[in-house]
Image 1: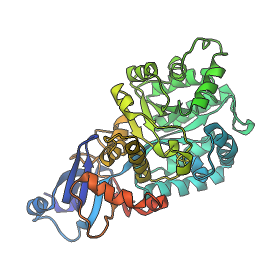
Image 2: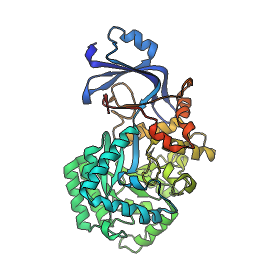
Image 3: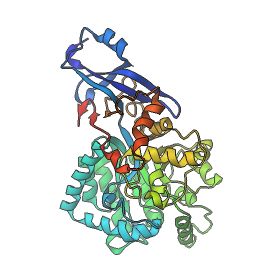
Image 4: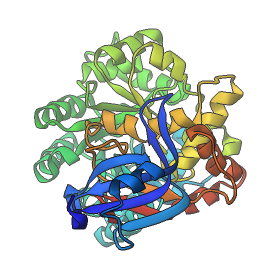
Length: 435
């Protein structure tokens, strides 16, 4: 063993595998091998075994002891709008009203290139501090805002400019030609990091969705949009499309995306709360994923939009893939710990006992990585994967028995003071390097 290539990290280790299984080491050791982007997980084992196995090469210089703190994989936030950071806690009464009153005026500011660059630097630095190292991100309509986000995002992100051609404020409306030319340019510039992003069916014409989807599929880019977030939204969408040529007979929101080529293995549908059995069958058949955003969909008194509760059991029964997202700024806080809390609390209140912190952790890490095609190299701390993880101090003198109690100990105390989740993460490592 080459001493200079190995690094040792000691702490309480969580390593999610699926909805029910999370490796737990009350006193564990994470061993990394290699440097820079080549840093990989060499070993994950109980501390006592690790000390015996690596005694000859462990030194003070290559060992970091985090004591009682949790070591766990970085988060994947699979649905968020980086340009909506300023409207996270604005009053919310309805989705469409909130967009018109707060969101659209905020996104108009990103027309200014310098403003977009300054905001991107602040936002993506903040994202790292929250422990988020991957996911799917919506930008504004502006090309330079996407470029600024791409430059500053640290981790595995796909990012796209929202496409808006109809039923949008004048300052945020593009022609179909502008949208398609911009899509072509951004794919050429950013490749598979670009995510084709019609804002939703209300704002994006069928032509742009159809032709843009073909471009994205050819380039193997991801596609993302919103689907069935509120009944009001669904009614509005269908009232528009039933008057458009070729869509007169559509029976559901999902069918509109199916007809425009928006569905598929690299497609991410935000929310998906109000879906029929037939719609779920379409999503399952096309291998489309849904991104559940519990803090955004939560009741108004919890600073959400009151959109309803995502029926994950129904989704899983239909064999539709899903992961968690913060939906900043519909969601009020950027921390995935708050998203996990909201997921567990809302579903437990409905008697869904399988809505555990362990499940929430998996859906905030490995599930997102798997959907983005990164599951073999990222998303947890299995041997051979990239060395990306976060460190979270545990309450003093409290020793968890398993992963579930460990997560409960760090999440539950702040449920009444949710801003505190922003301060939980003390260390973030990406590819073995401290950020």
